[in-house]
Length: 319
Image 1 (cartoon, rainbow, N blue to C red):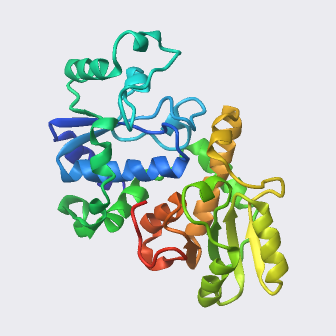
Image 2 (image 1 turned 90 degrees about the vertical axis):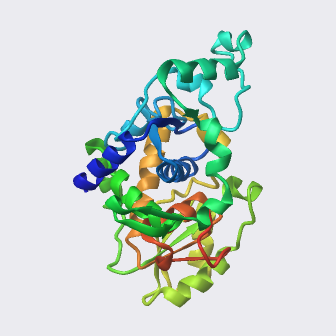
Image 3 (image 1 turned 180 degrees about the horizontal axis):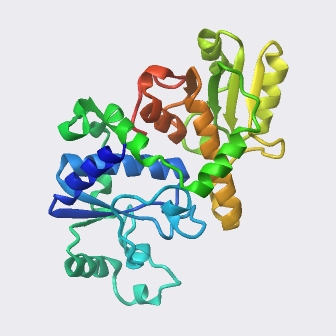
């Protein structure tokens, strides 16, 4: 793996054009992470050096990416990215930075790029990277073992390479996983509630169970959900099944706006548990969920669509 990462580093450093990608702006963690992976692939395809800025990520405890993972291979830690490396546009005014009320953010962005040899900030390439047509394109990076791969196929080795916890995070995540008496074989089911209904269609838990009954050999399932009500319904309606979960009975739906207001330590612990859930789900015989959730999109890239079954789409989609 280290050799693969070194090869990527060499390829990335060989490009003259440069993108500084801001990670952790305002969305949930896996929305941010999925876009990071897509951006890395887009940059490789178009010969653009990728650099990561995450110091003031919305999920950060103290140091963004490094709070959870081993250091990324290419970073840019200049604080100016916090205010002028945005995403959708460049006219946002932050009250904590009065200069923005005098000088248009777009002009600061232009000057910043010119002074530091940066070609693109996140907002410059965002719409291109998020173009749905990218999902049907093919990627060939022979030195990395990627040949005529689709986006979802090409993403997998990058997740394998970069989803590496630092020592502290690894210990906590391992201790969380150890609290679940998992059987040798099980399916994992991701059922999102909370604010997901405001973004896309949601599905009744019974629709997930139709798929679970097709793929489970022993009626054992690990449930990823933000609403413990789902677990209660499942245990009531499918009493012949065993359901395992890390969801706490006090949890009754996730809302990103509320989460963003939480204390940094609380958010940090929440994300570590979320990562533990995804590690458990990745070890399951089958993942069942929705590709229209960022967790489902991520799982398709991490373990491959061949081990995923979703109630909304037959095939993986870039959401």
